[in-house]
Length: 262
Ligand code: 1GP
Image (cartoon, rainbow, N blue to C red; front, side, top):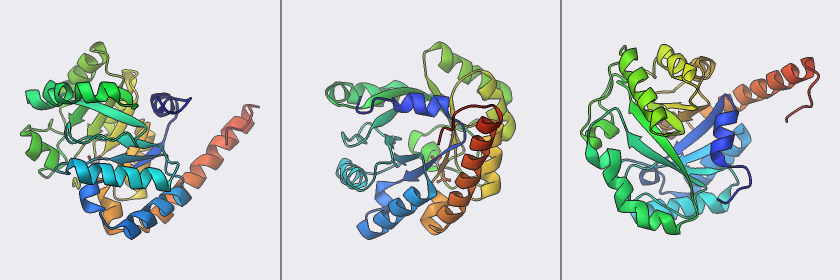
């Protein structure tokens, strides 16, 4: 583990955090990547997630190394396969795609990467990964050949999230898929939150309204990818949103006579 405070601890103890997802396959231009990272820093983005559906090992490592040399924002691997590893990252979301029944994504990639991971210096965070129908076919569904959970099937989500918890998963990641038409429904987020599991939610977040709903429903981290690929200036809106959040937290702590956190 590289940091004294673990990434998992930060994820699980803080609310309303934001991660920006960088897909190395779509971010090969270093000046564009640099601009994105600078703007992430300005916006107060909490994490950079790196991953993609079809990225090669070489592309992955190159981008991870560039990001690490450019910023102190913690870098977390959100892997699409066992090939997406880099010692430049701080942590790895060790995903099991529990909404599907494809053994490769339940345990196969994990076995393939285990010996290598054992030699690496990454914080490994066992994560139950649930794909929720976002109204369009996502690359994850296509690549994993699995079907997402229907949007209104709260029972299925509850069953899977509980099974994940009993298996020792530390986190749940609910994903409507990159470029989803609809974000993960609020009721699903609220329900999983009640199971006392830290929660990452992504897919289809394209506005501050979406982000606010997901945060207010209980997500510890909201993940934004696609929107920034077409509109990098959205980070300015994220900056204002974060600023308001910080002053709200300061106000609450002041009201309770506590020392300020920020
Ligand atoms: C997808 O959760 C991420 O796995 C982010 O989705 O690209 O739609 O923001 P978007």
